[in-house]
Length: 596
Image (tube, helix red, strand yellow):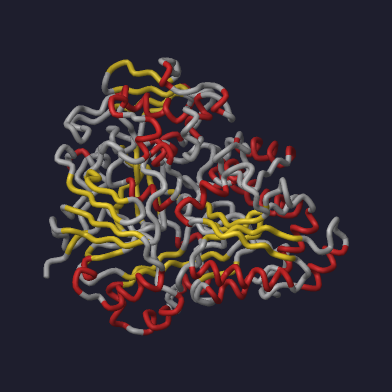
């Protein structure tokens, strides 16, 4: 989930679907994965259709709790977590990254969500709702009924009025970071112009609450995948009685299994059980530990060395997204002693280096940078060929409709084609351009930046590097007037098709939005809308795949990065840990503390 999601396409069949994921934890030059296991076929080819999780639409019975427990589960104890960054946002309505969305599972619930059945096997189920919703009027109207016994942390019931309020507050001026889908479907594409939120007493007529248990959404057009959209963290429920507007981002009120009891920004966070969360209402969250203690500020190598040592309290410690440092990769992969504590998962995301098209206006310069790009060097910094596959497309291979192509000859010349780049620059408006490149200020990204500067300067392109705070990475690059020419961004489908890719990353250019390249090509955006309106899902997927190449040929708004495989370690007393294939973050839903 870097940035976020998209709009809808055709009807999703009620059956098994392949889901790519959500926005990725940001980078500015990427967050290169540590390597995949060289003995596995998946690591040889990177992400592919057969590595995507399978997702079916569950029944009302599937929506009952409790969650399916992992083998050997033990309840109680304290789990420790160490990561690099604190969370930029805790307000569900302002969350659109995979790490924040995963953490929010601890305290925020939506109408729907994803239930783990087995490894790589999931069902969309009712979370707060009794099922995944009932569609009528050809998919324009969706009705949800809340479960009995769902409560806030103070014991008051969660009502349909809370659901309506939670959607309406997303229109407020301060809420700019979340997913746009439901807001757009209720009003218009630039939804902030249509409604200013509920704080002045005005409400949306097309969200109806006939009673405290029922909420009805009436969209302008059919949206067969509305139940998938409402599973996103952006649509987590916020109580009207406790809504403190901007301040809610620091002190959210829990509907989930845990309450945040202490938070020292950028240092630590502690969570304890919510006594009013009932596991019988929750098919998604196991919530096996009693407490969670989290600490921030750990780089990859530092965290990796602690996991390797596996001493003291670190035996009960994991990381949501810290992967094995490249410096320790071969040690970890070659020693079978680490195998029981090693988690591996191909990335469902596509990573890019975006151009700011408002600033880098000459397509020949953008194409020249693509040719000169030092893909092989960046791959090596991330752990080498076992860690990733060099990407040449916008779509991740796990998505339906993916079509392979290689416009800039990266597979044949992964170290960069300097002569071709010079040829294009000579034909451009500026044969010796200067590129202002923003990057995450971390040790790995410093190395990435050095390689990018060296590679591009061979072709006569000067790179001015601007370091940014990793915690607020996306807040910085999603500003319209951000002052940068190029920057990294990750994207994953919000639900199982490419309709949640192109309509978002090439959608409206708004403050805090996901079109960080400031893409404005009217012909391509018209084609996006045409494909969105197609009724045949297979034909729509083919059209998305063809559009991928067209965008790169006609506009070249970005440079595809590598497709990665995550490898992460955890402590020896951590049970039930695995990297969620949808979010590409270690899930808290199945983790428990093993008995010593």
